[in-house]
Length: 530
Image 1 (tube, rainbow, N blue to C red):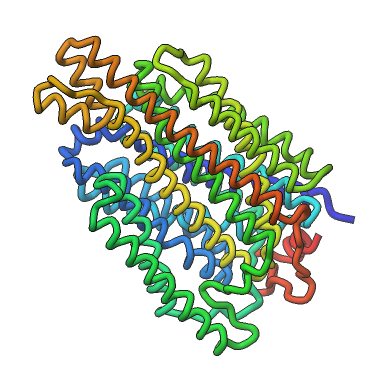
Image 2 (tube, rainbow, N blue to C red; image 1 turned 60 degrees about the horizontal axis):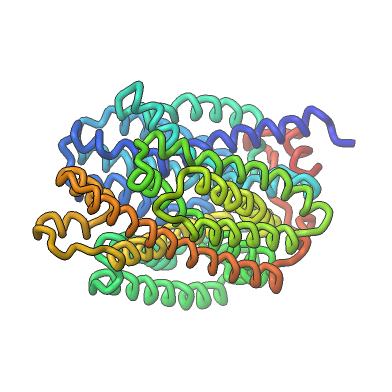
């Protein structure tokens, strides 16, 4: 008989992990609405504004893989507590940074803490929750994670309307304090029973490849895909990751039976893990593209300010919350295949409905198709993540979760770059700049935001309508393409995703939980074994 207090402790621990995840998710997108104010207050150049964002993304991509492995080796609770302290301290540093260089440095430290906060929950959940509760716990955590992204601009807009730009970072501090108390008192310590071997060569290959890929994707959004520097970084990423796989195969052949490498390639033999990641990455790809283009549509076409544009993403959040709630019921009754299929069908339907948007349409149509897309995401993303996490053996949960979060983040970055490029290509292809002064024509071609400003400065209603119609054309092109991605995800999910989680046999290789000399005791050991 499971002690009810032990069961409650698990769910309180989950609440702390959800709070940490919300803080990281909000911090990923909240900066978008604060950049104009920060540019003025910190006297930041355009390049420095880009590095406010890119320094965080690059370090986060690099740190996710070793974060999981370090948690397996040294203890997930210990590193989660350290990450909370680092994240909280870096948040205060960001808020009071007096220069652009100082803020970039603080963002690097913030990303290091965020990498562990993103990885450790996925590593801890398979350890503290038994199989019958794990799916629900993962669904709650993943829903919080994905809902936090569109919430970022809303929270940022509300704070900037009442406080200075540093407040967008200080909101992390009370969350960190609460999470520290909850994790330190409620969460059991756990680590892998297998001996992790430090592999500096493999680590360099993996990190360098991820950084090169992320940087190449980021630069494609600035320079365009034909640019030679973009392809240099992308080719370098492929070469480095191929070298990493080859090195890992050699290292795995030499490793002892009880050793765990940076990435255990055999984990991809688990269908639930592999296809759960593939489907989650595809869903994230479409979601981040929408998060990139949606606010621009609300601001540049419908004329809302930053806060108004953020608030108008609430329908997607509502759809996501409702969808994730219903998805749990469908998974319990019919399994993951049908749940993912329903999600991708809803996503494709919402995206195709959105692609019918025309210049004269108002917010009502946008609210409808964003709600449908959010509903589909609520079915697809938590189910796919639960399938992947549920397939990871507990002693490899840190390594597996770190790899999963790395791939998901890269999928999001590629989604912004590829789908953003489609929006820009459609926008520029539909523009008519004949007869405009060269400076005005260049401003209009540069993007919808500068195009709207140029039209308003010139007092030309005709040019303003042309810019807005061109952006709507680009948006429609992007939404059709994202619908195609959703349909591919539908086929892959139905064909390959296991209908029920393939739970590993943890009894043969148990995690070291509640061991003498580590935080925790007998009751914590019972939590894991229950």
